[in-house]
Length: 228
Image (cartoon, rainbow, N blue to C red):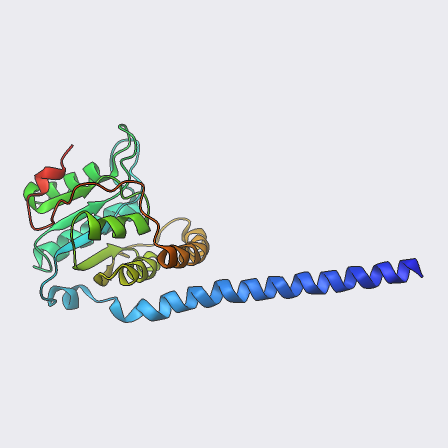
């Protein structure tokens, strides 16, 4: 009798746990689908983005920089797209936002140098040294750099989340993807992005402050004010 009762309890517990797992998965994938579907109309072609009026800047989201200081493949493609858009007149300024949390590791300097090497004037390139996450990059773009209307450049899988955050923060944002090639480990990026979208939906509800804020540096000024 005890054995039958124990088995029955175990079966009920297993069924409850399975039900909770299915429910949790439905929430996670439901939120993921909502983020993607709600922001898809804001993703434009380069030509469409170049026709926008009153854009404050092109926001380039940071990514890994190699030990040599050269941009990784993903970051190089983001920079390539941003320069193309700038040259097409999509916006008068570039905002490079990335991780410069330690002296040796400096994403934004590598990003700015790439744009300078492509012929863009230093004063037209701003650096956000404390863009430690997508959420923090967008939050600081609004609060520090005073942006109201932007074009975001990153890979397509990442654009949906960035646009969702921008919408939640009250920034008028459009995205142009920088998928020039296939990237090693993309399947892993896609899986992690599902979880990141869920995390940042919560961030957009509670609106935590970023790691650093500070004095305003309006994007319509001189980008050299953000140099090291």
